[in-house]
Image (cartoon, rainbow, N blue to C red; front, top):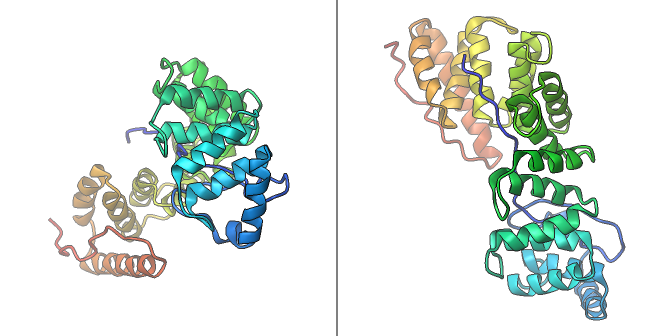
Amino acid sequence: MKLRLFAGITSITLLGSVGLSGQVRQTETTSTLPAGITRNITPTIVSELKRRAESGDALAQNNLAFLYTYGQVVPQDYQEAAKWYAASAAQAFPTAQYNLGTVYEHGEGIPKDYGKAVSYYRAAAERGHPLAQRKMGLMYERGWGVPQNWVEAMKWYRAAAEQGDPSAQCHLGYGYYANEGVRRDYREAAKWYRKAAEQGVPEAKSNLGVMYEHGLGVGIDYQQAANWYRAAAEQRIGEAQFNLANLYMTGRGVPLDYVSAYVWFTLAASAGDHRSARQLKDLKRLMTLRQLRESQARLSSWQSEARVSGEVAALDATQPLDRR
């Protein structure tokens, strides 16, 4: 089996505070704010936010910008958001510096400018803002606004990871696995993948499964590999779906189960894993017609559940039940 690891998820979204108190409420989204964030934001509160923002309150400036960013309670207006983020950032408010960096990174309301994005991310990162630290890692990893530098990338990922940022932990794990920016150390890779996986990062779960399957930094444990692959597979990670299917096909860590293998290979193929189509062709030769029909029934059930939950299931569960 070819070993493949992900570098970890990359957030490209905004974070902000929306209350009038100093409490920071964090959210990552690309469209609308969760209902719980805006439920208590009334026109009266918005008016008070505007009054405080205009009087120079950095927190209120950031929070007002955040509402303009997502068009909640106030009309969506990226330029107005950028204006207020800039006012707050000028007062060295780290969350606003991070948010303004994100605005420059994506060109929302102002021209895209990676150099300025890095400048604001760095300012926030140096004040200990974990998401800004993770963003600095990303910018150095990709060479966006700065020369590509894996050593610098891992330095910033570590800073965020040590503050508990799960995506940064996954990136740091990748560095230790791939000998990028830090000396290869599979034990360290497994340690950081575990930390990220336990916080729910699906790629980290998949990667930790790889470590257990191949004995990298941990003892070979197919049952643990299957557990982590399944956790990631259920979060639609195609690589984990493929690897879990292989375990079912060979009976390692799980009972030998061609039906489950068929289901997971099919789901992986629908996620874009081209190897799964080849595996399915070989697997069909080993399966009875009854097993193939059971596989199709499971896939149809999966599609129905996906539709009910509002997910788009890009899956053809009606392929011919031949064994060619």
